[in-house]
Image 1 (tube, rainbow, N blue to C red):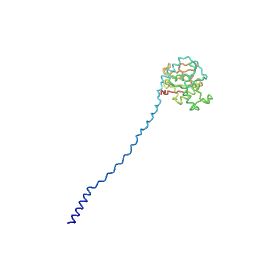
Image 2: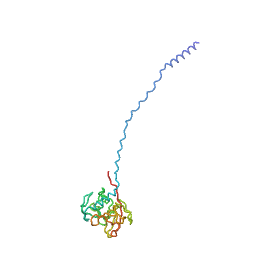
Image 3: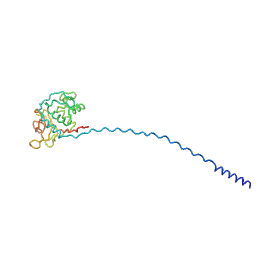
Image 4: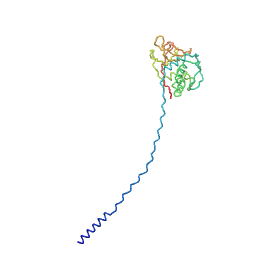
Length: 236
C-alpha cells in the first residue's frame, strides 16, 4: 500500500511539474529588408517630327510659266556668276531653261540647288564632262543647260513615253526638243489648247523671250523628251 501511495505521489508531482513548464519562446521574425529605392525610368526622347511636304501644285507651275510671258527678256545664255542657292541671272535676260527655273522657283523649288547637289553626288551621270569638258559641278551654269535638266528629271522625276497623242501631255509637264534636230530646247506644257482644241500650248523661249506657242509637234522641233517633275514642297 505504501508503494502504491508513493507511485501515485510521484505521478501527481510529475504532472504538476509538466503543467508548470514554461513554454518555449517563439523565434522573433526576421526584420524585413529595407525597401529598394524606386528608380523611375528615364523618359524616352521624343522622336523628331518628320518633314512635312505639300503636294506639288501643277496649276501653280502653269500660272508661273504663263506669268513669265509678261516680261521683256533678251535671249542671252552667256555664263554669269551667280549666288548660291537661289541665284539667277538678271531678270531681263535668259534662255529656255531660265523660264523653267524661274517658274519652279515660284513654287519654292530651287533647280539650281537641286541639280548642283545631285551632280555632286553623281557627276558622271551627267553629260558635263563629255559635252563641255567640265571636271566638277558648276552651280553658275549647270541648271541652265537643257541636257543637265533632262538628266535630272530622268533621275528624280518621271520620264514619260514620247507620244503623238496630245492627251498624254498634261499641264505642268516638261518637254524637250532639238531645234533643227540639233539645238537642245525645253518648254512647259500649259492648260491652253491650240486651234485644233486638242494640242496643248507651250511656254518657252527660243529667242523671242517667253511666249505661248503651238510647238509641241512642230516639225522644226524634234521631240526628244517628256518629263513630269512634280515634287512635294518641304514646309517643315
